[in-house]
Image 1 (cartoon, rainbow, N blue to C red):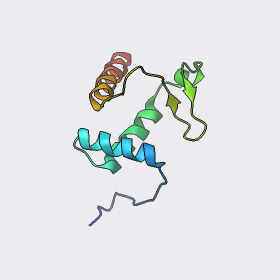
Image 2 (cartoon, rainbow, N blue to C red):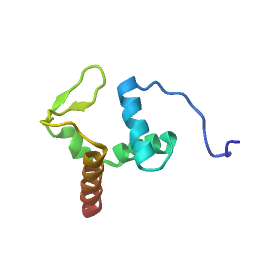
Image 3 (cartoon, one colour):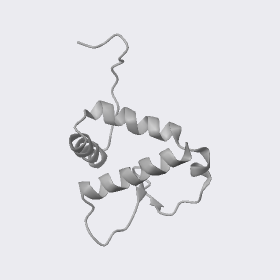
Image 4 (spheres, helix red, strand yellow):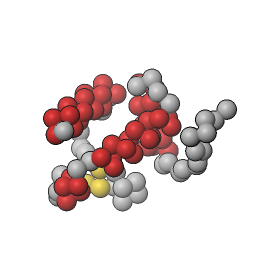
Length: 94
């Protein structure tokens, strides 16, 4: 049963990103819905100057996501470490 303050909607997520989001949600022991909301809110809270900085990576025209070349496969632990760095930088800016 849904809470009165929860809205149900449908969004289309490309398969690769969906798999990534599901993996991240599982690693963080949260639901896909909560993860997507958290990521969207982080994006809304990002400082405006971030969007004005020149991209330091290529943007995939299909997904609109940044593409980084890596000499090794990126693991969930790598993603967690980057999230922690991002959280620390966000807290330092406050």
